[in-house]
Length: 359
Image 1 (cartoon, rainbow, N blue to C red):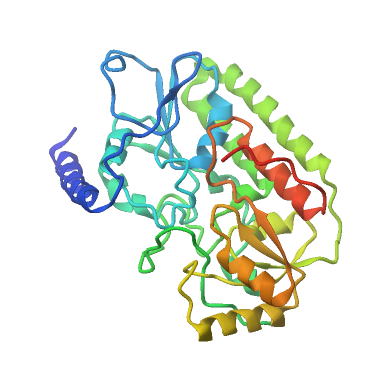
Image 2: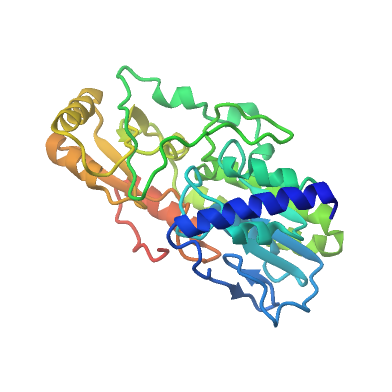
C-alpha cells in the first residue's frame, strides 16, 4: 500500500471512529453467515481467528441488500468465493447511510465491489479514492438510456407534488445526493431499477459476465447459477400478465415508478414525505387536499416504513392503501427478491398476497 493511499485511509478511518462514538449502534457486531462451501454470507464482520488463515481466490463485496441477493444467487456454491455485504439488511435505501469503521475493513482486500450506481451509494465517493485499484461494478451500467426513469418524469401529472417524504427512521435532510463519479454518469435517473424485473435480469446478466471475466476458472458455475435464477425471474414475469388496468395511484416513495411501469397502473401523484409524524395542522390539511386533488384510487406506501402518513391519508380520502415492498431490506434468503416481488404483484392485481416471511 503506497503512502498516499495509507494516509487517506487513516484519515478516513479517524473520521469514521469519531462518528462511531456519536452514532448509536455503530459499535454493534454484525451478522455473519457461512454457506456450505465456507463462503461468508451476510454483513461483513471483523476477521476472526478461524478466518485469518483462510485463503480465498475471489473476495466479493456488495453495497446493500438488493445487490447482495442478486450476487449471492450468482456465486452460491462456487468454491473459493467469499461474499460480504456492506450495509445491514435492515438499512433500507442508502440515501441516508453513514459509513462505519468496519466498512473500511470490508473493502480492504476486496477484488470486486458490486453496487447499484446512479447515485444510490453517494457515501462512497471519499473512500473509493483510497481504493483506486478496487474494481467497482455498477448494476445500472447494464442498462440503456431508455430503460431509466428520469426523476422529473415521475411527477409528470396535472397536480403539484407534495414537499414531503414518508420515512420511518431518522433522516438526514441535508445529505448531498450528487452522483457517484465512475465511468458512466447517469444524471438524474431514478436509481431503483431493480423493481423492474426486466431491468433486474439485464443487471443480473451483466454481473454474471463480470464474474466470469474475473474468475474464468469457475465460468461454467456462474453460468449455471445465472440460468437457474434468471429462469425464476422470467417465471415471475410470466405469472403476472399486465394490461391497461385503469387503476391510478399516489406514490409515497420514489422507488415505485419502476414497479408501476411494469403493472399497467398509472401514477396520479407523488408525495415525498420527509417525516412520519409531527406534522402541523396546516401541513396535514395540505397533504389531504393534494391527495384528494390527484384523483388516485390507491396510495402506495413502502412497507419498510410505519405507514402513519398513508393511513392518515386513507382515512381522510377513502383511498385504499397498498403497502408494497421496495426489496431493500429483509431476511437473507436467496429467493427473497422473487418472494417480495410476487407479493407486490399479488397486491396490485387485487389478489390475496402470500404471507410476508422475508422480514
